[in-house]
Image (cartoon, rainbow, N blue to C red; front, side, top):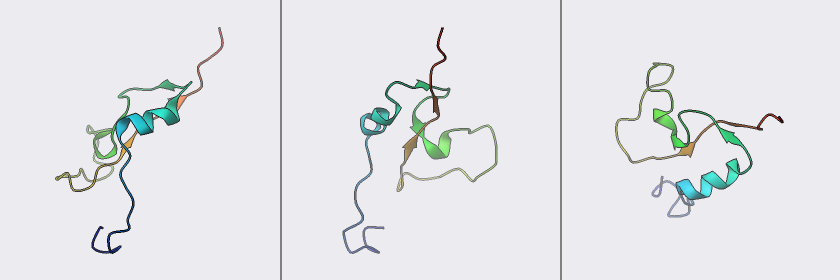
Length: 66
C-alpha cells in the first residue's frame, strides 16, 4: 500500500484511537479486536494469514436505560 500510494497512504489507528469511537457504548463480545479475527469460528470471509494489514474494530450498542 505504501508503494502504491507513493508513501501517502495514511496511518493505521491504534486500539486506543478506535476505542474512542466506542465511548458511551456497550462493546459486545468479543470486544475490540483485529477485524479479520472477529468471528474466527466461521468461514464467512478468509482469515488473514499475515500481519501486513491490521484494522481494529468491534460492535457497540447504546446501553439500555434502567
